[in-house]
Image 1 (cartoon, one colour):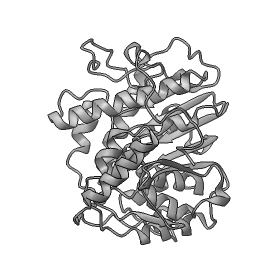
Image 2 (cartoon, rainbow, N blue to C red):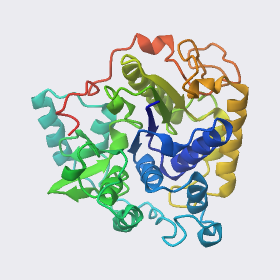
Image 3 (cartoon, one colour):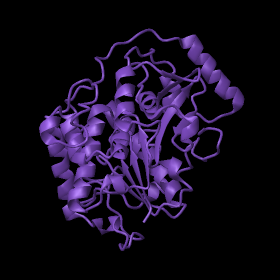
Image 4 (spheres, one colour):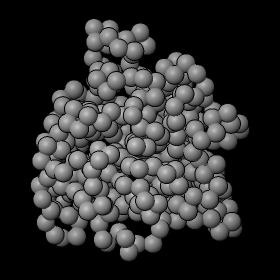
Length: 364
């Protein structure tokens, strides 16, 4: 069975969520991340994807992310050491006139632009340096690009077009440069330059970019989406709005895949997960207890749910498992609802998201 794995944006806590979800799937279902035919990574997900394609185990990555003793644990990361941590957030003044020119150019071309990308134009230019991060990933892979398919999503400035590196590795930057660009959060980390063009975080186009897998003839796509949520009732109003928007975007991307006959599993944080993730600052090492807590919750929901859908022999056609604690439309959902194996009816009526038509021009 050909399977795609999509690892979305989310910073350090996003990495924690990815590792918890992948560990839970491995322990409860027997599906390992290295079994994926294609891995798509955006921002923090690109770093996790690169580590998976390098051959690191999930246990290795948990130890690395929490600053555990890699030498005692063994594994391929023992000699390399942990990845550099993001710098403390620092900001600089942006250039609104330049940003307006960027937007005007897109308007003249009549090119659809996600509002997240448009808004990012007005965020001050980040100053955080990611040179050490790029070098660490290059040492990890020890090749210009991994031998197995890894697609890394970023956004080019000033065109604000999504780029997907890894489809034609010979034309791309090194894997370290690609990951550093995909992680370059506007207003926090400085853009990365490749062949005279600047690139920033792929999450400003979409937190997951799952739709890039359309047309790949995959049987199943598993999406880990730390920046959406199945239940936002306990979050602050601003966070509730943005997470609901991201969830709608995710469901539209899933719908694009399902129209090709691909089955889609989306893993999103619950209210309890969001509470656990809330207190972590982006530049701090992950506490091991956070990954354990997230993994325990996901494993419990896997045991309670109908996760035979992750096996080739399962019947996917009628299974719908969504997040517990009620749905966004006001109805109630079973407490075991974690993985959305079918797109809810309200998303099927939505128009496809601009920029997701998979024409070659937006995604070079």
